Length: 254
Image (cartoon, rainbow, N blue to C red; front, side, top):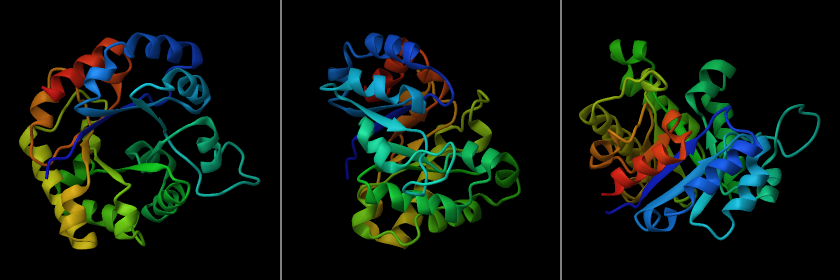
């Protein structure tokens, strides 16, 4: 099955409204052609979502949030609800990123609650998984991924999974400049697809798009995206400059 590439810019805690405006105005020219072969997503910080939404109207580039609450409303200082993301025009939301897991202690169960909440609200979850260097070196790669997939996607239906994007991000390759080799990345992606097949069936596994994340750059995007089970990228540092992100996508879709 041929799956359309999906490449997302995760800006993390970078770019307020002014920088977001500058980036999008620079990036959009030429994005129409790139979007024919690749779904393109930009995920700015919460405060930049409204200006990004206004600039991306009628463009081929979709908008994502970087997180969302598992609650609908109430006394949850600093949290943002799915209906708020709906209101500002977000279409996707990144959930379970390794930084949320490691720094803020988000568990598989907690991430699962967010995934289900996002789906109920009509948002597409970009569901992140991945192992640390210690876990990989101690032979726990498969055990870690199995727990993250089964726990984070618990209680989802086959229909739900049609709306989920998975992002495999080896934690040791995020922001380090160290990238998994294409063979390493492909091996992990193939295993994740096997896990999805075990949990949801072969048809769902074959259809689910699995992104790679971890120091993806213009210079390695083509080789990574050429792998059988790699269907896109979740990009951090290389997405912060419009020309770099455009080149990364252009190289990937060749």
